[in-house]
Length: 203
Image (cartoon, rainbow, N blue to C red):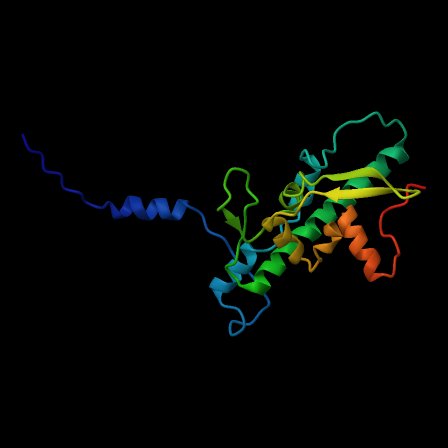
């Protein structure tokens, strides 16, 4: 048994569906020579959405939820503190996005999605960036050397993605590596500095 199907486009129904699909007006004061329609639409879609600040306040990172605050000035102060934190997160988003765009428009930051190391993004959020540093540990141990009691510091080595993230705002990796002082490192530093100790004095 064989069937033959013939498809005929219902142009009236197609036109009606396109009409009901909706439309949007874009207005700008930039001249057409400076900004085309396509560039204007892309700029509009790439803009920062102000509502993200309130979305962050409701998220679990800041979590503006009812707490045991009875005084009005305390409640107002708590709200101001959380909105300040939300603005700092937004600033981190902007700096990371701008730093990646300066390298190359299509460059992506990878290994920031758990379980998907090859997945990348051109707009990493500050929360996701901070999440990449959650397993950094600092171990401080007392050390008896001669008659002095000092502290030795050991920090978790930075991963490639963590070093990559630090380069985005132009921060040196020494922010972390300078925290670590073991006996070998301390002795070499003492020799370079004429015997001055870099180990932390617990007092």
